[in-house]
Amino acid sequence: MKYISTRGNAPVLSFEEAMLTGLARDGGLYLPESIPTLTADDIKALHGVSYEEAAFRIMRPFIGDAFTDDEFRTIIARTYAGFGHAARAPLKQLDAGHFLLELFHGPTLAFKDFAMQLIGQLFEASLKRSGDRVCIVGATSGDTGSAAIEAFRGLDKVDVFILYPHGRVSEVQRRQMTTPVEDNVHAIALDGDFDACQARVKDMFNDFEFRDAVGLAGVNSINWARVLAQVVYYFTAAVSLGAPERKVSFTVPTGNFGDIFAGYIAKRMGLPIDWLIVATNQNDILHRCLTTSEYKPDGVIPSISPSMDIQVSSNFERALYYAYDQDGAAVAQLMDELKAGGFSVSQGALEALRESFASGRCDEDETRATILETWNAAGELLCPHSAVGVKVAEEMRDAATPMITLATAHPAKFPAAVEKASGQHPPLPDRMADLYERSERVTRVENDLAAIETLIKDRIPN
Ligand SMILES: Cc1ncc(COP(=O)(O)O)c(C=O)c1O
Ligand SMILES: N[C@@H](CCOP(=O)(O)O)C(=O)O
Image (cartoon, rainbow, N blue to C red):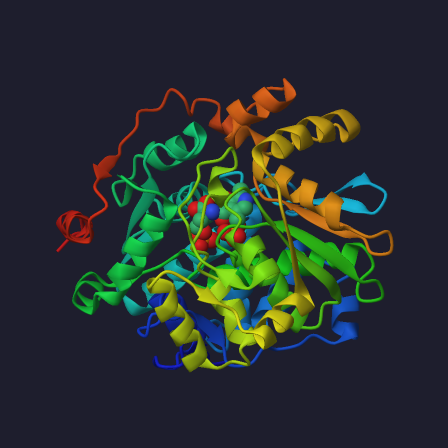
């Protein structure tokens, strides 16, 4: 299996190389050259198997000869051993035809753990073999950072620097990043929004001198392995509702477009998905683009679903690559226009996107009202991101097709917003009960590439 860049002008890599490389050297994102498919019988055979077995069968065709089957099975077993639910990604029924896919039973209580725990294991196995050292730099609006720090803390041969927007993540998210004591992990509070954090990370990848000097690697959804691991739960959820005989739709609380893009990959692999519905908060650039064709970032507005406070949505580039018939030059042209302020998706590409994706938007009042209504009607306490999903799903679903909304984080990560909306205080699980007492370690930086690069160079071992 070979991996190519969305912009068509970077070295073709193996799975392992793509995983360790992060951003392609032409600024694009890696994708498999072709997408393996599962037959209806393969999908049927997923009925009743463990999450780990499903993960093995779904991901195996993408990894080539990077790991033997035994190695890969061991890695998967370790990945999900620390999850607090035997099903890993359980489905709950909200009402007739509407289901919630709970993705928050991992160590940091958000869907990021599904992929981050896996790539922690994959990096460890790969670096042990090569003896190389890497410097991971990531951008977070709250959840990627905590999941990355949890997955990589204390690992040999890996330093991790996470840039988060100062003052714009929840206290639990911040403490998950700032309280680990291992000295290979570094929380960096940047003066700016998430888009600024992500832009600086991409700038570092595009600064080849710095990139090569520090051995830069990425664990944002820039990294294909992140997306791949998220494909699995689309299969397990759909199968438990009757796939491949019965189609399902998914509504996905969306920001950087990585999670919903994993659903799109599942669809291309042969999973019968009717609609993939992009649910946005008031930072609705994706909804605007899918409805008007215009993609013009106009600044992030802080919300009560802060992990989705994103206006430059990295993985949308991967969707555009397919919508433009895998034309890397066309994608590169759009990304140049984006640097200059924005772009318009062509009519043909918009129609291609609309074959799979629909969208909706949920504002702050609607988010709060949905938390309260879902608590009263179903006894389910939603985090604000999942509430955005549930609200949009309710507006968009039809009676004929089961709708699965992704519950992307545990309500206890956002206790203030959840309590204000519902009157219910969501407690942290026991293993994190002392989070508020632990001491914090964080470095504040300005939004300045040279300053961030200097800080990183000074901190990594020579
Ligand atoms: C809780 C939560 N929900 C939704 C999202 C949006 O997911 P994505 O960025 O993959 O679109 C994020 C951030 O990634 C998140 O942390
Ligand atoms: N919402 C994310 C933003 C980064 O997304 P990623 O999937 O590209 O890592 C977060 O919580 O950090």
